[in-house]
Every structure is written in C-alpha cells, then in structure tokens.
Image (cartoon, rainbow, N blue to C red):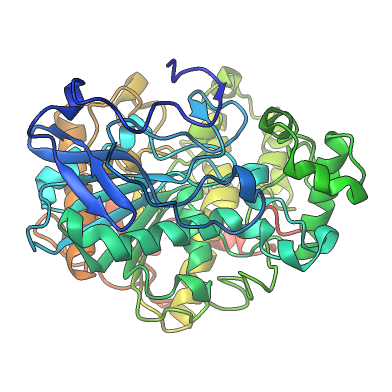
Amino acid sequence: MNRRGLILGAGATAPFLGTGLAFAKEGAPVARTRHGEVRGYLDDGIKVFKGVPYGADTATRRFLPPAPPEPWQGVREATAYGLASPQTHAGEAIGEDCLKLNVWTPGLRDGARRPVMFYIHGGEYSHGSGSAELYDGARLCRRGDVVVVTVNHRLAAVGHLYLGKIAGPEYAASGNVGILDLILALRWVRDNIAEFGGDPSRVMVFGQSGGGAKIATMTGIPLAKGLFHRAITMSGQQVTASGPLGATERAKAYLAALKLAPEQWPQLKTLPIERLVEAMDAPDPNIHKSGIYWGPVLDNAVIHRHAFYPDAARIMPEVPLIIGNTHDETRYFFRNEPGLFSLTWDALPARLGPEMRTDIDPDFVVAEYRRLYPNYSPTDVFFAASTAARSWRGAVIEQEVRAASGLPVQAYQVNWRSLLDGGKWGAPHTIDIPLAFDNTDKPAAASGDGPAARAMAEVVSETFIAFARTGDPANPKLPAWPVYELDKRSTMIFDLPPHVEDDPRAAERRLFAQVPWVQRGTF
C-alpha cells in the first residue's frame, strides 16, 4: 500500500498474517496485552511493535469517547504503523480505525521496570501521526535503556467537533474526544507496559508543538491524573481552551461547509469519512484568514477549567514539568516564503503586523528591535519579533503562572543553530525533535546531521532520558539547572556548550508584556 498518498479505509494491512511472512519468522518477539497477543520484529536488538490497538474502531463511535479494543484470538501482527486519523493533506494512510500505538523496548517480561517515554505528535490538533520517521524510538532505547511509545489519536473534526449544544448531553464530550483517546492510550500503558519491560509508575509524556499543547491541556484534566509522572512540552503551549460558544460556532460553520443545517447534525454519523475530511479546512468564523480551529473545549464534561488561566491547574501538583521553546520558532513556519529573506525596512512593519497575533504597533516593535539589536537585518527582526510575540509568549505565560502557583517547572530554550542551508534557519520550530530522539540522521531532521548535531542530540536526549528516569533532568552533560522562579527566570540554553541564562531575551519579553496575549482558538 502506498503510504505517501491519501488513502481512506478501514485498514492498511491484514492484522493476522501467515507464518511464512518475514516478520512472522521464528524468533520475532511476541507480547501479551490485555486484549490479545502481538508479534513485532527486531531492530538491531530492540523489540519493535507497531500498530498495536489501544482502542476500538471509532467509525461506529464518531464524536463519542473511545472504547477499549475488542479482544482477539491468535497472534496479531504488529509490524506496520496503523492508520493516521482522518485529516487533510495527510501524506499517509488515514481512517477511523486509528487508535493504535507503537512500542520500542530493549526487553520483554524481564522485570527491568524501565522508564517509559510516551511521545505525542504535533500538527496542532488537526494533523500528523505518531508514525513519522523522526519519532523512531530505537536509538533512545539503546542510549538510555528506556521504553518508547508513540501514538495515533483522533484529530480535527473527528477529534474536536463540539456538538454538546447542538446534539445534546450524549455528545457533551465530543469537543475533546481526541484528548480522551490519549488518556485511553495512557491507561493502556498503565495496564500493559510491564509486559514490555516498562515501569507504569515512571511514565514521562513529551510532545512537540501540538503534542506539547495536548500535554499542557492534560495537566488540567482530572481524568489524566495518575497516568503520567513527568512532562515536557516542546514548543507547544495551551494556556486556555476554546470556549463552548466559540466551539459551537465552529461546529455550525463546519456543518454549513457540509451543506447541513444544525438540526441535520445526525447525518454526520453516517456520512462517508471522505466528506468529513473535505470540509475540515472550512473558514473559521472567528479567526481571520484561517481554517477552522480544532482544539480542546472548555465543556465542563472533560475540561472543567483552563490549564493555565487564571493560574496553573493543581490537578497533579506532584508532576514536574519542563517547558521548552526554540530561539527562532517562526523560521520554520515561513520556510516556504523565500521573499522574507529580502525584506526591506519599509516593507517590514506591514508584513510583521499580522504575524505577531497580538494588537501592538508594528512600527513601534520594529523600532524597538532596531534599538535592541542594531546588527539585525529586516529579516532577522521579522523572525525574532514574530517568534517572541506569537510562539514564545504562551510559553512564558505558562512558566510564570506555574512558578507563581508554586508548582515545579523548569525552562529551556534551544539556541543551537541548524546545520541546514548554511544556518539560515537558526534554531527553528521542530529542531528539538531529532535532538530529543537522537535521530539527526533522519532526512526530515531540521537539525541537519554531522558531528555537531550528534553532540547536541547527545546532550538533549540524555537530558530527556534522565528526566524520564528520575523526574530530575540533571545529568553529566549539563550544568546545574535551577527551577524557574519569577525573580530570576533561569533557563537552560541548549547549545554547545549548554549553559544557564537568567531571563534570556528579557527586553523582548517586557516589550510584548505591554499588551494582552490570547491563545489562538480561545474564542
């Protein structure tokens, strides 16, 4: 099956295969889950299981909370990634039977009680999967004697279409079923990971971009309590969830794109999934020049309060949290707009204004950046100001309210510059993925590869492993890393060598603190 195309269906491969196939040969690892046995394969000594069901097919449960998978007889082949959630621009096989996860482990049933590193993919709440090559966990397993898990879950309309005020109480949780999928996957880890050599009492969740936002969201959800024990958000913030009225307006806009009136919503349950996908990029009724925002909803069913407003949720105060960002986040977002590298000072304010996502005079911002950084070009100012205003700002708010609430939090910033294209991308969004997974050799790695990239990856991956193991990121690759407190704002700078700075980019932080910041999708 061509996994690079947009393929819709119930399954990409037959789950039970004959014994003559290569992956079913004698010696392939077999694990017993609570729902049935799965057979994986060996990757240079690491036991790999892909496409393991943690939930039932969602096709008959559209917009409803997930259910555990049906038990199966015999040994199910677990050698290929499962379907990604229905989404636009997928680039891989998609379908509603998408509640699958992947496990990499050094050992089975050996009582080793290894730390578990549970990764949640990005792509906001509308795109992506746990199947990307960058998320391969084999190198982390070898480096740190850990168990790595990646996961697929419902996204976009099938994960976050809020029907509570349209369809009634049965659908009260519909705006958050994608998050409930993650919670079900974490319950699967709790119940099954010992079979895979893991410790269910040492589960670290980590995720980049949308994955970090999902983790931030879960810190405020009572149903997630006790399912993870440390957390790292990587360039992913979720200060507030969407309100129920705004989410209802989005649901109506989606129905209108499908040419359905609100009272015709029951047709959503039986429409072909292709139709649902086609409308997922319909215009958002509240965000200018944007497709519909799909994300968590303050529904008082799953989410009862915002995770970081008015303060940090105290649902799980015992869980230490690391909040990270990269120095040049937006160089990634605009990588396909080459004209930005020839910006003039005259053209800069108009181009910068809409990208800051906050109402502040761009002429004033440009003047301040020219004063702070007299050697910056117009291009440098564009990327620095848009990063500080729209990407970094949410992370700062989370760090501030977490520290003010007396909850454990540490901060990092990646300053190490990508090796690609002569370093023109700086330290862009996604660069910490290959560094954390020690996968700089993968073609999609924003880091590029080479001795410096591998040295940086060694620092970051060892730090993540240490945090997973003990809840403290301290390790021989780092200097002492203080907690984040408001008087110092100590931040680990991932660079060669790594070092700590107090209140990095303080002037930029103070500049944008002059104006309110609202999480995209709140209204």
